[in-house]
Length: 289
Ligand SMILES: NC(=O)c1ccc[n+]([C@@H]2O[C@H](COP(=O)([O-])OP(=O)(O)OC[C@H]3O[C@@H](n4cnc5c(N)ncnc54)[C@H](OP(=O)(O)O)[C@@H]3O)[C@@H](O)[C@H]2O)c1
Picture 1 (cartoon, helix red, strand yellow):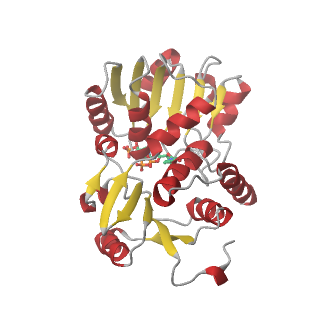
Picture 2 (cartoon, helix red, strand yellow):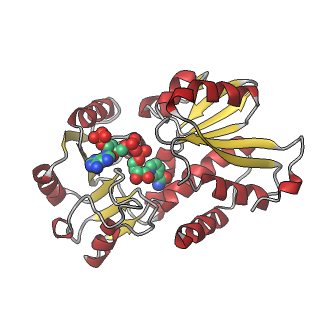
């Protein structure tokens, strides 16, 4: 834990805003990395109710809070309050990291880069693959934007069909890859999974406390499939467990979480955090839960 005796009038503040926020691993992983580098910062979490988002951001500016992570449900809503938006975040349509500099908010998205780093470090080479993406929310947008230049085909299935189609239309402006979008149901899932090389779960199905659920039954998976489940709590979802029993390559959401956090940390502090330490802290905490 951070030694509160070291907090002084010089201590700079970093934070995360979201609602709810109690599940977030960000304070733990950032504070341990700040302490490791002996940086005079503290990272705290704010549970901001939807009616208060504007006032919360005004307060953050007034209090000169230097760095802000943004989580569900504000990654899209914060954009209107920013002074500058990184072009990639603009294309993704979601911001997970803000830096306050000279009284102005600069917004970025480190989820996309974090996810792509995690995939390539895991040995899953997405180049030329047929990818099946489940979900069309903030995480799906970031991951698909990161992947779209290199893959052969992307099929997006989502519970709300028009959101899948809107995402597909946006991605088509960025890439010549084949992009298809449909409503998520048993039939579309059965057909799409047969042709897929990489399955990405960007829905919360399988997340704690619904950790016995999976978005897809084991008998629909096949051994040549690589599976990337963006969920990190639990570290091994039912989907990952099922895929492992078939010998599939698998990746959970932990490395994406650490990578997006490390990119934000470096942007705020100009120092590279110890990602091994950050990861160890998150694993320890999730294992205790
Ligand atoms: N590892 C990481 O660093 C990281 C980062 C961000 C997110 N994530 C994980 O990614 C997942 C999605 O997060 P997000 O930020 O994209 O959330 P989000 O913006 O709320 O999007 C959620 C997506 O899941 C779909 N969905 C929700 N409940 C569903 C259900 N019961 N059945 C079918 N589809 C359902 C939604 O469909 P509709 O459009 O129909 O609502 C939407 O497409 C979460 O599990 C989150 O923990 C991980």
